[in-house]
Structures are given as C-alpha cells and as structure tokens.
Length: 275
Image (tube, rainbow, N blue to C red; front, side, top):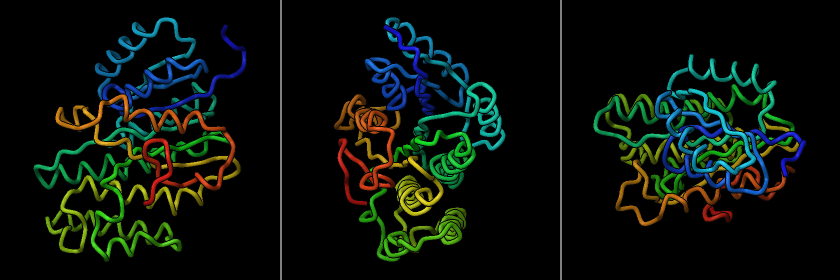
C-alpha cells in the first residue's frame, strides 16, 4: 500500500547503464518507496533507460523520472540544479555521484576523465548542497584504484593529511591537471592511470573537505563498487554488475542520522574499508 509520507528523493548520475542503472533497479525492488531521478548526459539514452525500467518494474510504488545532466558541462549542471530547485522545491535527500569515464588514449581523454570523474562531481555536489535535506547523504562512487596504496609516497603523504584545506586540495588537483596536459603526471608519483588519480582525489575530497562542508545529520561516503562487468569495466571483469550496486543501496538504506563512524569513510562490500 502506498504511503502518504513524503518519499526520499534520490539523484543518481550516469544512470542510463551499468552500476547506476542497476542501483535504480534495486531501489525499485525495495519495499520502501523512493522518488528517484535518473540522469544521463545523452537524453535519448536516458529516456530509453527510463522506459525500460518503468516497463520492468510496473509494480514498484517508487516514482522514477529522467532529467538530462552532463557533469562535464557547468551550464548543464546549472540547468539541472535549477530544475531541482523548481521541481523538487529544493529538497534532495541523496546524491549518488556515479557518472564516470575511463578512456585514456590521448591527453584530451585524460583531461576528460579528470573533468567528469573529479571536478564535475565536485561541482555538482557543491551546487546541490544548498538543496540537500538536513539529514541528506552524498555518495561518491570511487574505486579500489583510488586507495592511497596505489599512489607514490609523495602523493600518499599529501593526501593522507587531516589538515587538508580546500586551498591545498585545489593546488594538488591543479598540479595534476597541469602535469596531465604536459603528459608527465606520473613523474611526481601519481599513478600512470588518470582514472586512478581522480578516484584517490575524490576520496581525499570527501574525507577531508566535504565532511567539513556538510552539517547536522548530513553524511557523505565514498564507495568501491568492485570491478564489475559493465561497459566501462569490460566483459572480463570478475564481478556481475549487480554486485556493484549493493554498497550504494546499502548506504542509501542506512538510517538518515549522522553516524561519526561512517561519515566521510570508504566502503567496499557494504563494509568500512581503509583508504
């Protein structure tokens, strides 16, 4: 029976396929009803995903809508945030930053990876923060490749720093962008894969910066969904895509109440995991 209680609203970026899509599927199968916003940068693919999900889950009591969003494009982010403000009365309960790419054939590809996986996710998050409910959640989809152990000593030392400020973080990020443009980012101890670098920086941002920006019962997390068989992960990945959606759904279902043990932390397989 449909409850008259206000549904928790959940934004999932890059959800026309892969882990984002399956996360929505799992939420639609839950007994608890949600107001889910599926986003994708390609409007046609987003609409197709919406149609497919609604057809497969006709009995779900959750509400599902699609809204175009390209986290690479500031204008698209602004347009989406304006839509949230107008259509959702500026009240969002969960943001799942899932959109990401991992194509690194050229320098421009590497810069695109940084812009989408890192700076775009941060820009969207910070522009949505004024509309996050007082007990809302921010979930960053990261990777095991974002663990500090994947980086050189200098990078580990810089990012494993509880005194990290936004100024320090931006300086480190800008250095990576500058070195990437010159094709020599690995010379300073960064991983040779830009994807890995964006994830370790996303972890550091969530851990040291975002935790200081949220307030009250608001919470944030980073998630390693595992290496899953998706378009990005490849058919040879060891885990089914359904496994990748388990931890985001687990975090969404946690009580909407500040938990110091979990806030700002890194999760894998629905458990806390070291950075």
